[in-house]
Length: 151
Ligand SMILES: Cc1cc2nc3c(=O)[nH]c(=O)nc-3n(C[C@H](O)[C@H](O)[C@H](O)COP(=O)(O)O)c2cc1C
Image (cartoon, rainbow, N blue to C red; front, side):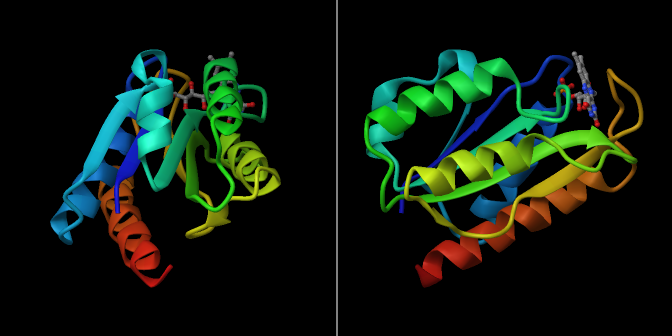
């Protein structure tokens, strides 16, 4: 299984989460994992991956424009039947976030969702992440790896 993790991040918090998710996947033996920021990912990266894991900071209750744009373009290259998972960073009290939007886009494109979207808490606009969130992201990475092995 070839896994592509794509994230957006204005202040580095979602990037830390993305890297921890990748570390979690690799810990449990998933070796073909590529982690890229939205502004450097290519159509070929998406085409060649079996699994897309996308993450975004929550902006106005949704994913950032950059992540939505990248996913929209990727879907045009063919998403149906691929496996997806979503995550975001957000404030503690937020009732919704970027993960829901990403997951909805994936579902509409006919992707199979590996595990329900997960979110990670930032204490302020620019961070830091709340204590324990990077460890939770490693666990989430392991959980995705376990789920995609069953697909
Ligand atoms: C323009 C803007 C809008 C935001 N809107 C929300 C929001 O609706 N809900 C929320 O929980 N956090 C919101 N935030 C805070 C982000 O969740 C936070 O900046 C982000 O998690 C930090 O991640 P990053 O360092 O990867 O950019 C917003 C931040 C910005 C800059």
